Length: 169
Length: 272
Image 1 (cartoon, one colour):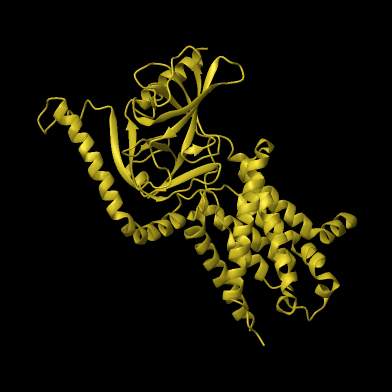
Image 2: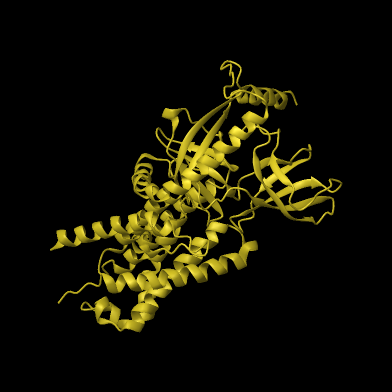
């Protein structure tokens, strides 16, 4: 059971990194939209796991993407931040329910799931594009990229989410 | 002591987060200097071979187009050859040549971020070193920044750190070519003095100041020009000849005289 769990997460990690760097990094929709559906890994990752391990895995995931896309450590900085912020966001979205032992992502309403995902994406993209441009003189450019890439990422994440939904008892 | 340990245990997650964040920020800020962090680039063995494998599949879809480009390039070269009044053979003394040209394939390209890099499938094993110029048949592409044994990453001209010496064709007025991060088909030429007569459509080529590129490699044409804030220099929008979204075959140029030039420049710097 547990080894199966690790195995699934490992496969997910590898596949999402490969799909991200081989497909979505070279999409360049309208010339600048490169959605980042690899965030789904942090969305799907089991809730009850050790937090420091989760943050470390988030860092590793970002670093893997950086490895391929020549973005220094921008992805790592953004993923480690959302990995750290995830419990706060969850408490905000799901309320106290989330503290219960029986809490499951699949038991929540669709709106809650989408809000949770959207907040993760917004936090990730704001950090990523702000660091990428590294100056506030391009504020408009940053905003434009955050909004459009964010929308594209959200749509793709929802599509992936419904494609590979975890149907467990 | 007890309290410090308690503090660390209580805030261990925040501390871990801050540590990892600072590591990644360290990598990022460090690489904003000219030479980027040595390990975080796509010219390493793992990402290089994955990109190479993916390129091996996708390049079949573009063969026809690539073929057309190569025929066009051959046509231009033949045109040059015959109109210079020579036969179809040229005598080349290999001991006297200044530039060594090598070919490579672009296996990874990006143009949507402010700092774009390409990856090519040749590395130190094929004689590629840092700071060699990379061009295509249409115009310049960038400068080699990092190399591994089999791959190299190239700083594209669509990179806000890129700064290349360029001039207006058939004159000796030169300026520096930079990118403002906005459009992937346009770069900016700065520092051309106000007294230079300019026309929209003039050709911009590489200048002789650089020891990386040979002189007169095409870059693009003037699309628009304005005086800058100080009213003494032009700020010129240059439309690139190269379609940066679609590059496949590239040539790497090595200037054999470059070490000598660099040594001379270093001596001057030492004397001062």
